[in-house]
Image 1 (cartoon, rainbow over the protein chains, first blue to last red):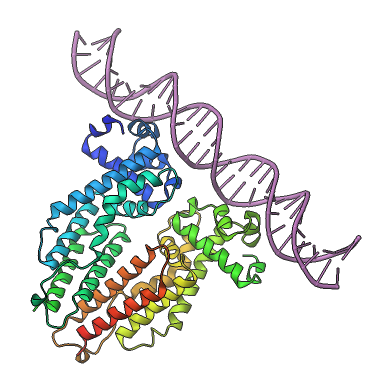
Image 2 (image 1 turned 180 degrees about the vertical axis):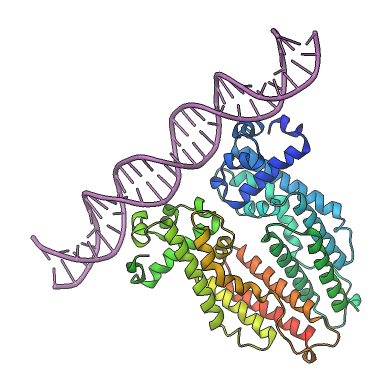
Length: 201
Length: 201
DNA sequence: AATGGTATTAACCGATTCGGTCAATACCAT
DNA sequence: ATGGTATTGACCGAATCGGTTAATACCATT
């Protein structure tokens, strides 16, 4: 990546980043042309090639950024320090919605990159993705104090229920073109409170 | 579509259908080449053009088939006649998993087609999709007998929870290359039973 | 107004890919 | 051998691709 790119005003950087996320999220690597990205960003193809030597460099740069931003937003959300599992999930989704507000296509891009198999980028991509992989470990149940929950409750099933519903939530959000972030958050908050009432003593 | 296509042995028809679903589900219409579909199906491009006059015809044919098959599988599952909401959801997902067994990429194809905006197919596509649209109305709560459920339970929230978790389930399934259908069904059954225990009196 | 450095682009290139055609071939029963 | 059918390789013109380069627009300083 050309150093000049970092010196760009943030608004322009964002436009280019999001254009890249957008185009690469809609087609596989090979089928995602640079001129489309340039057009989407409102700059010429030549300028895009000035900032990034070639397509591969741009693609890997985007993946690296996606990983960095995800880590940053998640840790900034404080969801890791949260001991209350309900608030932990809420903070997690809060972080994701804020990311979607600023980078609407980043998570879709990352998901697609996760399964990208093009020889030209496959190997180097995997190295960048590695930290991402550990992150998806939160499918499994964290440690909980059983005395806080209703007697006889299967904590594993409870967590699976909540985890899946959250995934479903994100899924629904992505399949909507425009996202009313505040509305989404309110709905999710209601769901969390519903669970608290349902599961806690 | 050429009449000869219908006279093909089912195995070969299936190969071609699934190849189409697969390729079109990975890229937008414009970026999905016929020769890739042919190769995936194990036939020559010429033969594919013998069965379908052009790309547009194949694409629209696939969408029509996807819609027919979905309707067929769903009504055959008996989920519409089911009065027990839990069993209704189970039967619904059962139908979907059976579809995924036979047509692994069909639902992804349909989802992508849902948002396809290419001028070449957009208008005619919308006509075919119309029935599909009504189907997604089941986001809203069906009528339920409140006396069956635990007192004070917010039925609307309950349904939203279950609906979202089911969506999350499908989502997870699709992002796995190969699907262990039986395993998936067993897990979902456990989830349903968990809900029954949780929500019913 | 001339200068010079920087940001940006239009025009171009060779290679590849695309949708689609068609004449030729493989296959198979008679 | 024959004749019909299923299937393909080779080909076409047009478009698209990644990438280069020489030219231009822009802007502050003199």
